[in-house]
Every structure is written in C-alpha cells, then in structure tokens.
Image (cartoon, rainbow, N blue to C red; front, top):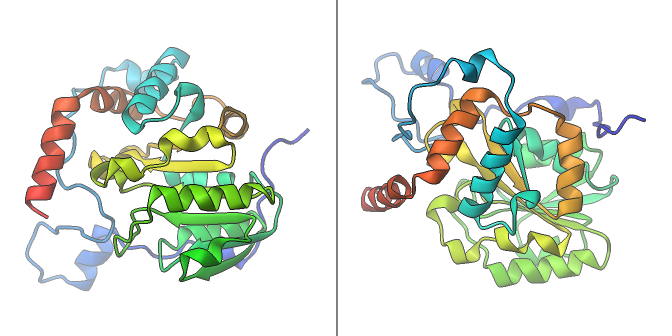
Length: 269
C-alpha cells in the first residue's frame, strides 16, 4: 500500500520567488556595496560556530542514535512534551505539503498576508485554499494555518486564542498548523510547542533561521505521537543529513550561545 501523501499535479506546483538569492540580487544591483545583508529571509547573519565536521558525517549514513539524540535535544529546546512528539526533516519547507496531507482535501484557510508557500503546499495536498485577513475567519476551516510570529509583519497571535481555535477545529476533525519559524526570538510563553498532545495541533520550527545555518536544511514538526508517526513514515529513514545532525546536536546543547545571541539580536534590532 502506498502510504505517501497524494499531492495534486497542478499549476500550484510552481515555487514563488521568495527572495534570498544573492546571485539574483547581485545581477539586479551590480553596483551595490558588498557584502549584501540579506533581509528577505529573516535569517540570523551570525551563524552558530559548530565544530569541524568529522569525516563520518558525510561518509556514512546517519545513525539512528544520532537522530534520536537530535529529537531529544529539539524537544527540550522547543518545549515539546517529549522526543516522540518531534519529527526532524531536511528543512521545514519540505514538511508543509506533508502536514497539509494529514487531512483529506477540504477547505483550508491561511491567516495572511504571510509566507506564500503555505497556500501552495495546501493546494498541492488537494485543499481548497483561502487566505483570510481576520483571525476569526479561520473558524470553520478543516485546515487552518497561522504563522506566529508572522512573516513579514511580525503579527503575534496569543496562545489562548490559538488554543480556542484548535478546540473549535477539533469538533469538526480539523487541524491547526502554527508555523513558529521565528519564535526563537519571540515570547516563548505564546508558543504552542507544549500543547501538541491535544491531537490536532502541529507546530513547525525552523532551525536555520535563528542559528543562521539555513543551508544545512533542518526543520521540525511537533505533533501528537499519532501524527508524528505518520509524518515519520512518509519521510522514511535518513531524512536528516549527517552535517545537519552534527550542527544541530551542538547548537541545541549550547544554551550560553543561545542566550547571548538573543540578547545581541534584541540589542541590534
């Protein structure tokens, strides 16, 4: 039996240009002073200084023990109930259509304006997608998506409001997806990472933005154990590459760097 999500083949499979390409920026502005400071992607320009990669990180398949250790540290860092609620993937972007496929096609509403890939991913999963500007318009959807804090305007929806929405969606078998890619430097009390046991809440977290290592391609979905197991089955073995495992294990454990970086980013905001 094919357990993979069935993604629609339609015009929405085209990726929108989201910026972040320094090659394109250099071509458009050839006389601009260098180096470019890329503000289009919200990536920390101060990357985490992980130690040199061991040869095994690229010569061998990732070890299950290292992936287990990574999800343990990610659970502690993000505040998930346990590692069983955490799925590691090669970037949170890849998770978007998989998470949208947790539900049969139906009405999906996305609080906008926001990151355009959520709408594209939901459409690929077969949903009828509508971007709404009012938070209360998300009620009644089967799939509701909130980027929190939002990209690009920083809008923040309170945890209590999101939990109320999740309860409303649960009555109709719906799922709330909260993209917390920028929550590392946001108010931690508003994160839903600790609430995913409710069963219909999926929280997405991006490693590369705060740690400034977007090229490693590492992201996480936090969900109930049932949903996490389904996502894990779709991703299959060795979803996270050795270099990402190496850097992630070090970065999640380095609380001193994390605290200092948050202070520094706030100081220079």
